[in-house]
Image (cartoon, rainbow, N blue to C red; front, side, top):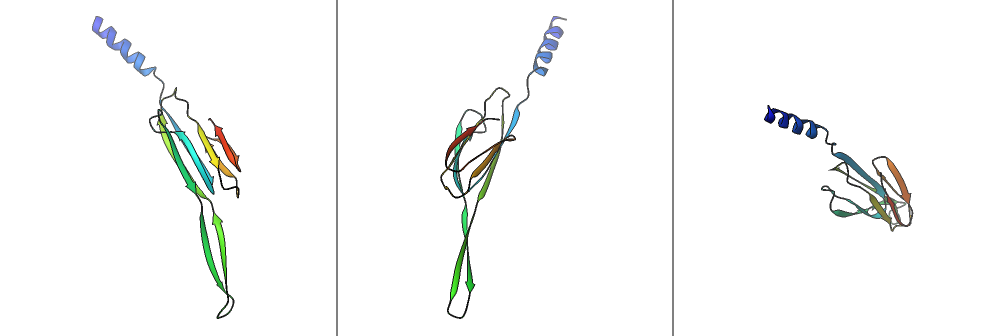
Length: 121
């Protein structure tokens, strides 16, 4: 009976434990650096997101061309699982100055045109 009570108590305590939570990081930018809490919630990771150029050549005549260029932003996302009592954050530093970097961490959103911004969910 004593062992049964002990097993029952351990089972009840184990079922009261809080579940891990899923954190989703997202960013869209031209040129930015992202710092975020990594998969094991103990390390800080950095990631570079860089847009790209697309060049189009438009013929005007047999000898004359226009070269047109368009800059596109890039997107990045990462989903990690961490313990319920870990404190995730996301820091985005935008260095392009062309278009604002937009970012989100579990629905909390922000943007920055130059410099750095840090958010938490």
